[in-house]
Length: 598
Image (cartoon, rainbow, N blue to C red; front, side, top):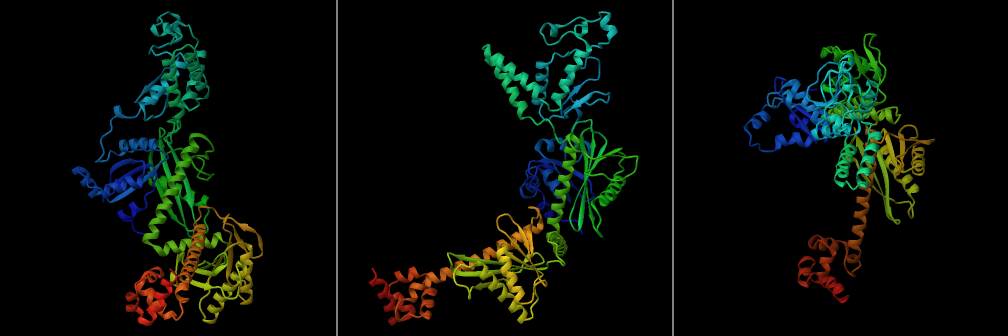
């Protein structure tokens, strides 16, 4: 399959937050951007008139669009930052270190400090973030300082220096913000207990801290210190609304490859995310065409080997959705909880969106491949002996027993074949009897196909449950077609699929393409039947009064309606207007009929 055009790439972008990347004809990345809605944002580049000359030049140079789906706008912002710093695209601003996003650092030292920083130093310190809002960082640090009395000085608090009396407590001690470890007024063990609590806060465990904060707020309010209570309340609100766990995960997850796979009957899609210090630095999805009945495990092992060679990955650990065999040198992790599971879920989301994008493109570019895939999927899902290339669906329509009709719609290769649609006026059934009506139309349909030596369908779908299915089976039995055509019934409420002689219904995945096509067939049959029913009732309602006029026949009625368009206009017409259409004699009869009634 050739590379899709820009027009097709734009049509198949998802309406999800994420990061988009533009490439030129040489395959060089020239721009990275973030979007709340990828489809709307990227499309705007090609539909708007840009005042900026460089933007116009950029749009002209775009030869390919790629994107990475993320969960939130915040994730898109962070991922955009990482990719811009990694690739330095020509049309992006150069992001310097002092403009990067802030982190909170717990310094690796005796009596650790907790502070904000924009630099990550590999000295064993713990870093939490990055945070997109400096206000959030300040709120977290203020919260920590309000709950735990931690030092802010940068002294080397070695035990021998404290014992030698090298330091004196500062103003922070006298203000109650520090317990004075520099003079030995606090033990390192007690201090470390506070640091453990701080780590819980930074990991997103606010429960205990919020309880203490609410207690502080009530104390301020009880002491009539309403301004202080309001400030505490604002901090609580910020923390309660803050999402502590970003998809750009904790920097402890570093030098890790993440792989996931989604597949259908014909293809599999493996997504690869590469993580460095908690951030995604690469995303790639590989499409694999199935040849035999390969399992997802086999395909994933093949894809991991190929992708790691292609990108020269030396990571010693990978995250995967299930166990794979890749040798003893590589650590295989199957995440179940926490940040690791969070990033695996993101990889699965990207694989699913890539698959949907490819399916949309294939539907436009290669309809035959699309039809083949759908047919193979339906054969598997519905447990059929052959692909249902020709499907017919029946539906009855009647309102309070009037004008009973039925409809048969036909799908070929998964698409409506409207020239093969058929209407049926019920002839042998008195009153609203859906079961008998279904038996009649199924018999009439396939009796005619047999008589005319027309091809029979591979699958019949009956809109209804066990009752309608049993009625249709009677007709197939009468025509000696039982077992020669697959037949199922679909119940309207729970989307249950019923098979002959099987009391237990089949339930398909609500998002499966097979169920969507069956629903489309059922809805189309219902629409087609209702349309015929409505037209029949409308024709009856229009014609009844005109045809009851003494001396007026069907030909006159048709002439009048063709000229005046409706029975109401005929009734309101002047005598000379009627004479011009149907002559003097018939015009007088029509005119007299309506005006004598007034």
